[in-house]
Amino acid sequence: MAIVVEGGDRGPALTLVGHEGAVLCLRFNDTGTYLVSGGKDRSVRLWNPRRGTLIKTYQGAHAHEVRGVAVSQANDRIASCGGDRQVFLHDVSTGRVLRRFKGHDTKDVNAISFARETKDSVLFSGGYDATLRAWDCRSSSAEAIQVLRSFKDSVTSVATCGHEVIAGSVDGAVRSFDVRTGRVITDTLHPPVTSVSLSSDSQCVLVGVLDDKIGLLDRSSGDLLAQYKGHSNSKFKLDSVLTHDDAYVISGSEDGRCFLWDLVESTVAQSFQANEVGTALAALAWQPEGDCLVTGAARGDIRVWKGCG
Image (cartoon, rainbow, N blue to C red):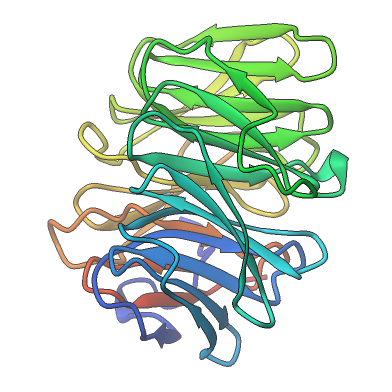
């Protein structure tokens, strides 16, 4: 077995303490210098994961748990969404809420992503109301500039690439929308889709589904290139991501373990107990330069695992 993450069952290199309750989402900025987290305690937190320090806490905007976070490319804004129908845009340095977007019909907004092609002037969110909504970060309007309603069930995950936005849904499909032409491409996997993430060249999309499998799809053809098995995922939304060099697939498991697969061979390269036994590992993120893996725990701490190579 390859060793991709140091420590493994011996424990993390660092532990970030601050959240009071489960950590539900983790996201690095583009360079990997900073980490943003959201949790059950209704707060968004900004960390320096290398030093193990909490930089700032953003609290008071959310009345319910924070389910998704995103960081602008300029590192000056953080977007967040959660269990209160709204999407918030925070000023990083002052903590002030710059925008409060409203429009999702049911309380849970599950995922959020800036559109890099627009220089982060547009933000996409997906929610329990089976819609994907676009928001203009430059406008004073709180209303969505576009609402995509092709879904038959809750939207669980969102990723953006150029003029396209990719979303996974509980209805068992991954949909790619070209926001310029209105074209929609649907790839049906049947089990509920809980996560989508792109490869570094954006040619492939990694898809987590609720049948103990993760699929790698070719974006242009929709072909299933590979499947990854061994973890447990039949009940909860778990993050699954690719490493910065696309060499490995990483996912949490409902038994609290973290699994890493060789991308090409589809074999388990490494697994270790990241959370307490029986506590699902739902939130994780890989540092963009490969320095570390971060995982979120149900009791509120964030564990930093040193990457190898």
